[in-house]
Length: 495
Image (cartoon, rainbow, N blue to C red; front, side, top):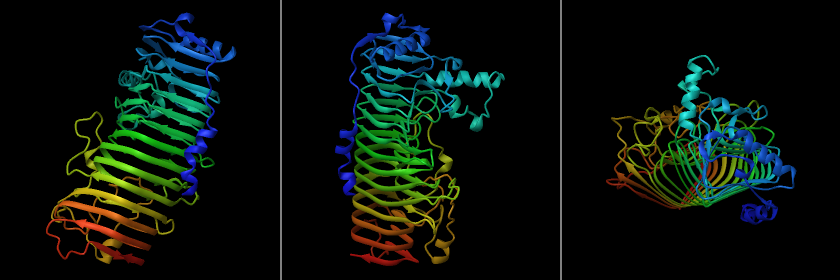
């Protein structure tokens, strides 16, 4: 973890942000801010001109600028003044499906450097309208799409931003609204700096907050996200790449999926992350999800100071074997500390657009979980200074999962299943369930059940080396109850 402690300083030293040499107003190139005129060619012409003439800022003054797909070029920053809005065209055919990334987007950048989007203005994809217009074209046979889950494929709906293999990228202060697909993707970029952005991304399916894919050298801080899908989402699409050297600080997020998530696509992996001071609220799934299910690694991760209020689950660490193709997934050296969390009895995201599917939920409230596979074990996880308040009230007549060796052995591995905390439906603990793990430490952990639960607080199954130091259990009517159940576990120390 010593490397992670120096990470912020290292990234700042590496991050060389382009300082624009000159301002150019997009209106001087003929762009109309009337909310009607489609300015795609005009804006692209302005970007090309600035890039070819030494670089600078393309400034959008107050007004509404409609556009389809545009490509940011090296040494160009789009600067949106207060009151300026870049509006996505609602005509799906105004967008390009880029041949390299095979996605649609409003704002692309491919293999560029010293670029950015800054200012107090807004990028609004108007995604609900655009996606439904695309749906109409598909039903009429004008556009081909499999319509899986009765919606156009994510790649056939425009994101707001997609940057691929770019160096020195700066995204600051802007507001991002209503994409038709994912919101903003930074894929295999180096030296990415995101600060002070506001994201409202819940107008349609798959509306993530931010997706950072196989990037090296990232600072993400002081930002707010309200998303229909995963909020702070790190992915690894390339088995030969890795998402690494990342700092996340002072961010707030809400989701009808997960809060902080590594995966689900995890082919290469994730290494050297320092995440500090995040708040997750009204979130359907887990506040923290680390999923190594496609052959990738997750290692050297430090999460410090998390407030999780009204979330369906708090911590979900999972190794699976979904698309590994012979690679060996691994997860090790994880520290999660200074966490306060409250899990509700009801649905956390009720009333939001595109709620999480209620049919996914187990009947009794799920515990936090750390679950590897027999041959791919989670290693060296430290949980320190953590308090989780659960509703309790697990009822064996409603749904039952016992703790006898035979009953614990009957819990399926589900190695190829899409990873969610609810995938097993019922689990045998109300606080933590740990399986196929080595070197797990609980230090200063308090688990509270507001009502009596038939299950113990913690179940450890096939765990080699576990330490419980100052672990407190608060549960009504539980005097004399055994709160830590062990199965096939060795070197367990309870202090």
